[in-house]
Image (tube, rainbow, N blue to C red; front, side):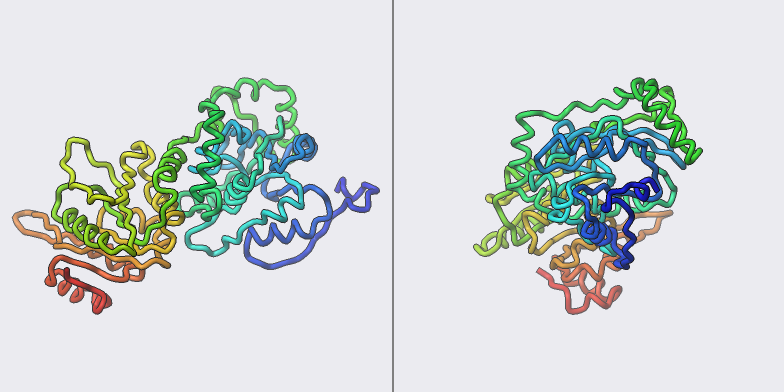
Length: 437
């Protein structure tokens, strides 16, 4: 209501009505409708401190370069309570940004620059979401700096059924120029000259809880919504975005350095190169495929194999990405995400081959929709069995996997026709889509 009291004719409220059913498109519409030089995004569910707009505008006005400014603190309330501190891009670094979103949806930027960037429409996309993360990735790729306004606080309402809690772990930010090998290598080369800050989680808890200025901001927010409460230092619910790992981004950078200049026609997804019969069969298949000069093959290994285990020899000239060696154990849950980034940027039109294993199960469960535009070829071998109370039982896990992903699997290859005949008897829709080699 304060804006309505100002004499400036540009101060006031616009309430355009539009139905686009898309967060990204709605924000783009609002940015176009705005008349001011600066845009501050908002969420009606949250509160902001009394100095919020002034702090962000002052920080943004200090730079003439392309920049997006964020508040320094997110003070959560509701079903969870914590305080997160944000840092500028020079402290966070490119590698953390590649592996996750170290920023938030609340920003301020120059209107003309946001119009040029524009939010992506991710509505109803089965694979992609996180329009804000995508905007920041594209901004950094376009030369923007990500900066922070000191002592600006957002009081962030936490709900058990929030969109972010629902999407987390199931969707990704869309692929963009940030992940293009040339761009990523250029950005990482610049960062390597000035390393990012080391992770520190509790470095600000004392200063935050003992700041009379911050406490006054919390007090005023509490007057509006009593759910906003101080977070006591002893609760240890203070963290920074510097706690995010750099390992995913560094692994992707290594992949770009080794293979970024290539484009592959065929990508083979396997758990590892052990000495098993299935692995030998697939390696021989790859060796035959490599004889065709029009084909370029990439092998991606998605599980860890102990160093003492015997390995099948790699065909000469075959490029291999071993995610079990590149990613630390705590990040092996991100193998499917890394696989997608690799295919998106090194093999966007490739045929994808896979076999049944935890790696392919995770990929199909987490991001199976990604493979829909690709031709998917499945290697199918004899079923495994187990003994229970003296009787032999066939394991049904692989058959279940093939049933559930029938819409994504285009063709099945096996080393024996009998395997394929049994498959067609059980899943008739595979008839006409099998080959014995």
